[in-house]
Image 1 (cartoon, rainbow, N blue to C red):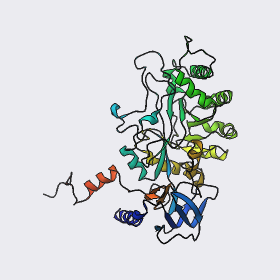
Image 2: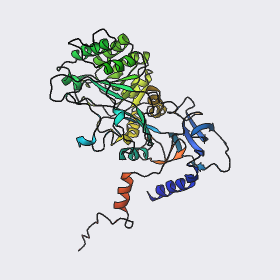
Image 3: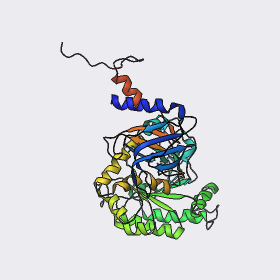
Image 4: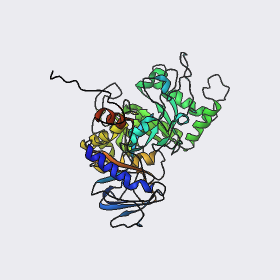
Length: 429
């Protein structure tokens, strides 16, 4: 640990003068480009103005450009943190610190359908969760709203945000819809009603149902939002697992002309050919291998490998508390690789695939013209034994500190500016 801290500290000292200029030369790296060029051995990366201008061997730069010798270690783009609530929640168990779910209809019997609900308006770029995850090599995440009591199967909108402290979304809005057993409590305990209601919502957006009709459920703003997605100006992310529901989703999307993606997809492997033909990105949790409910009876650990072998764009997300544990996406990608997903596709699942799916321009790969959002690793980035040694955003090195590292140092060191908060008792007396 002390050796890694020394190396990271040396990097920061060497790069400190480069902060205003965003100039950088990384030499002698194993460059995982996450592009068609694949992995380049003993390659250099030249950065100017915060963007990559060249990738290849024996690159040169002006004498005043900071240079880092990677000594053969891996360099990747910063990684996708999955679908999270970073910057929308601070303590998941404390409701007052959570801004991800609309519950205007709490206590009523009717659904509150507000697709215009946009969680990016509550994003806090100073949240402690951002630093915790960016020092682990994560550079961006997709903010996703949640459904809740009194909410609706259309949870609302989110978007990609970078973890560099930028306050605004870095990509177009994404609409989130939840289907299947987990959402049936919002639709009269019937999954058939989910399709009936979704058809109505989109008919309202097209003006086929008057705004003042007794059955109408959308506001004018909600109709405008759905109209935008009907016109193809944004991706609709459906959380769905059961193969039968995915089959209906493909028909629904075709009928309404929607650009869709799937999160979850525990049984998506059963429809791999259909999903590949339509180029539908599927974001899976590679550890979802148990029949946890009747929507996931066909879950299996090689789901990602089977989908990718058929030509499906595969991304990685995680179940559970994704915001506080986003760094574990590397482990999930590694598990997918262990179950047959090619290594390059495992990296693409955390870089190129989500960048393309969610419209994050200039990201997801190491190539000329891309933003210089880069990570230098101590070893294989999909191996939990490796750590991020240095992270750059737009060619600028970040300080590799977070609330976690500060707590670690306070409890670990015998000397420092703060008193030790815990002392191991002497049990020899």
